[in-house]
Length: 339
Ligand code: MTE
Image (tube, rainbow, N blue to C red; front, side, top):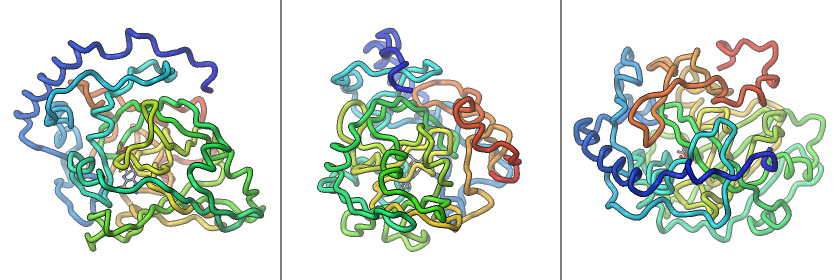
């Protein structure tokens, strides 16, 4: 996919003046919004939203972003190499927004606190175990994986189930490459992922309401799809701790909660694995979690989204805009039932 994509035109990189004035605008409007932040993915442990209020009401387009609270700095950090744009041609979000507006419950439920709390989290060395129904199980360091599968630039949209989105320039390699090398046995039908638990460095793990560790799962064919990425970097550099470093999953056509961070274990299994969110609230966080504007979250509409950095909401696209690439994975399935 990558090789066909032209380098990002300079016209799509936010010019400094526009960027700074946008920050001022967000800062002013953020003050008006008065901290009306949507409950993060976690619904059951801390319900904050009225069951009848749609997300659009709870998160006005002017909700403050990370940029609003940060001290003004320079333009987004330039990448060492020209980055491709994605196929819908959207400019990517600033490094500041991507790294200071994060969902990462192992650190905090406050998106704007995560970067600070994760600053001492050790992402190196990083070790990943691949186990379960495979002929060649193994334990790999991130360095080994990066040598074996050189990181590629991938610009993906990320749509959170909460109703916000970003465009992020990742560095990573297709999960399929690793899976092929470990040789799944014929009995393997799903892939289960697990996040590291290091309570000394992850203060959120002390929160007893969540059934830690964070876990996620994909069907094997979803995991083998070329869009499914194991990311170890962004914006041309290393993957910051708050974004899931050492290594995270990125599944761009699914809600962001499927893109599990700080993975230390990948296991091939026969049965559909449960995930942390589906255990907390299966009705709200289904196994498939494909982005779908026609299937509402029980407590809010999924019809539109707030792209971080933009003043107005935009329509959410089926499969987050990746339908041409992934719709065939779900042929014959009722997406309203299999949400
Ligand atoms: N992975 C772990 N381990 N813990 C989390 O809390 N949050 C998920 C996902 N992966 C989460 C996680 C959610 S809800 C989203 S929207 C994305 O990470 C956010 O990724 P970002 O902070 O890099 O934008």
